[in-house]
Length: 367
Ligand SMILES: Cc1cc2nc3c(=O)[nH]c(=O)nc-3n(C[C@H](O)[C@H](O)[C@H](O)COP(=O)(O)O)c2cc1C
Image (cartoon, rainbow, N blue to C red; front, side, top):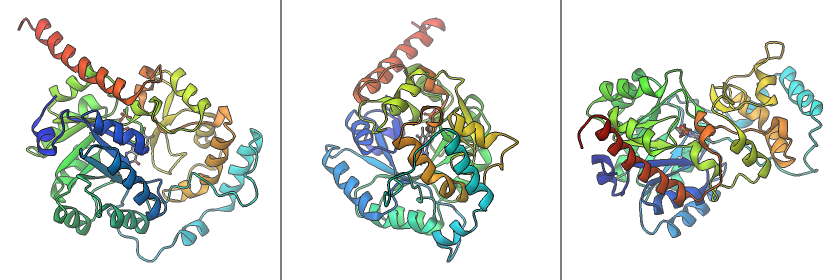
């Protein structure tokens, strides 16, 4: 599945895979796609360096990328402690009440909260980049807006292409004006932070808006047929996130969560602010219901909500409290019905793509 963009990046297939797990990212790259490691969960630069070292050793010299969550607007001199201090007591009490209602045990004395996503604090994202620029990363992607101009310039100086996610044509044009190389048009169906426009409408709008910049179609893609649809809409490739969550290489560390994903249908997700403070598609759970309940205190803006719920999410994950257990995932979860290796998923995607092209030709009488 070659396109101009896959040739430019030196990959066999124009299939980009976002994942928070190094083993998945490396396997996508080895399979002939382009693995992109999500950095938001790395608080410390050393942890990222350790995993990038590992990626280097497990990607057979093939290219891979890194995704950070860097806000375009600079907030100077605000520490994590300053942000913590802005969280109202009422919200802290609501977290504890909700956990108590479901009998979620406390973490052991001195046990650190494992799920602490501080990567969207600019200083943390910048420290991640300081590490990443020492590695032969070929693509830098940014989740929430165009990265700051100095970061784009630094990436380009290192020969790194810069991409960013866009949920509307306006966002996409902003990325183009900021000098970015690739736009990921991410539709409403997608897992994680999303806008309100479905991929079927968004992809061609973004393609047209930023022409001739290459666009990757994202959101709701989990089969070769859907990849063919993305290319038919003008994308130069596709960007998949959810589908890798139930692969053998994914380190979800929770059989209960994997089983929930395997059992979920395409209507079992919700776009909720419960996890981060910005609308993010995720499994609908008793946790998202509590935060989305008009009787509750409601969510706080990013980054307060993420800091507020970090310890709670760790506890829910550690003790596998089923009703509350969730993860960002898109509507494609309905097709994730078995655990397979990344390679098996990948083969399925590339074969399905060929089948889809043949089928369209047949239907259109072009055989
Ligand atoms: C578990 C999970 C975590 C995500 N975290 C991020 C992130 O940190 N940065 C980012 O740019 N996108 C993130 N996304 C969105 C993906 O990059 C991608 O755009 C999306 O998953 C595509 O839609 P799909 O889920 O339908 O494949 C996440 C998606 C999932 C499923």
